[in-house]
Amino acid sequence: MSYVMGDILEARIICRLNNQIAVNVLHGEVTTVSGTGCSELQMARGFADHFRTAYAALMTGTAEYRGAGTKKILPTPATLEVLSAPTAGSAFGTAGGDPLPLQVSGLVGFTTPLPGRHGRGRTYVPFPSEADNGASGHPSSTGPANYVARLNDLANLMLAVVIGSGGAGNSIEVTLGVLDRTAGTISFNTAAAGRGGWATQRRRGDFGAGNVSPI
Image 1: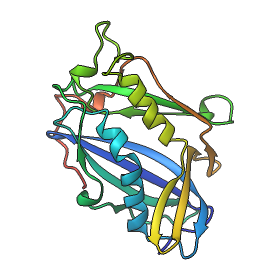
Image 2 (image 1 turned 180 degrees about the vertical axis):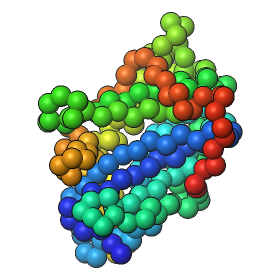
Image 3 (image 1 turned 90 degrees about the vertical axis):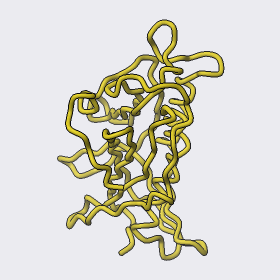
């Protein structure tokens, strides 16, 4: 099947370092359908391609960006997740250096016109490099190793439409935002920025069980 206008999608961005995976969950709404649109696989590959370079630039060289999985969650009935093939979206990190502890993450915050916490979202960017840890213990924000600038590159992608291409002028555009699960609606992102401090995700720690990447 192909997605249609107004469908709300959930996308999982999947990265891996050794036996640990990191999953960033995003939501968006189909806001443009051109021609016959695209398939679910083409949409998953669109998400994988949209974020690949920005994620790779933020990760240590031993970490791998694996790709994306997408599915429709609203309106019901929901669909099964479709995964991009590794060859369509994978890349090793390009930040160089040894990894910081696995719990350490970069942080991108985004906001919508809705007030309060229902109008805000965040993404914990996995597997940063020691090369991007500044002398103060915060992410580097100056010079060639400017991690915060690269975080902002990723943040800008949260404001751009994600395109699933069906070829020959057929495509779907998805606008990202914050999902209100109670109302079943999306409030679109209007601002996004990388944060100047490290965040933590405990589920990515060294002492948990290993994870198997779905891609």
